[in-house]
Image (tube, rainbow, N blue to C red; front, side, top):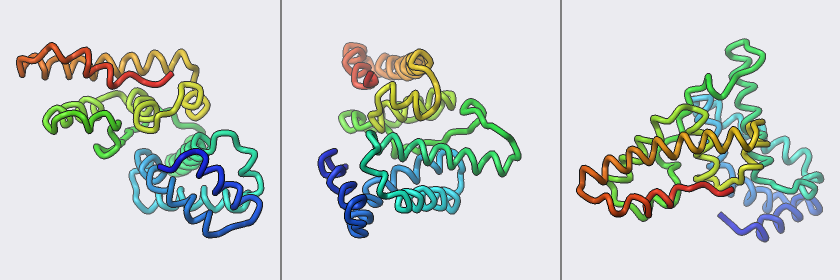
Length: 204
């Protein structure tokens, strides 16, 4: 992922110069992660690709407004989230869909970067613990740890309060912590639990 400064430079080129090459670079930076985010809801490769295409098409149409967006990553995730849920609402003929009603599938390749410091067996154990979290916990954990989003950004994206985020992350971390502790205990290594658990604390 490029730095914020480089992303801002691309945005200026897109907004002020209508630079298609810069837009392609901008697309390549975010498209993969946004596709995975959409797919976690819609469970269809074709639909997720369509969602991402629709969002970026609208971004290009409104390119002159890009420079006025303070947090482009949060903006894109919000657009993908809304577009994905709109698709599900149309398919299920519901006016609204709750995150608690969704079967969120994040994929094992979306685990937070800290797992690179952990052996493969424990990494698998942690992945399974995350996979077994309730949908809301899983999504909030992904946004906080994988996407490194702040509480305020997550709240704006999912339209929930910081208190709710705190509560859901506490549930997620407790459940993941219990699995880690159990694994280390079985391995006869409980001394590293607190250090390992600290790796998974979210950004405020």
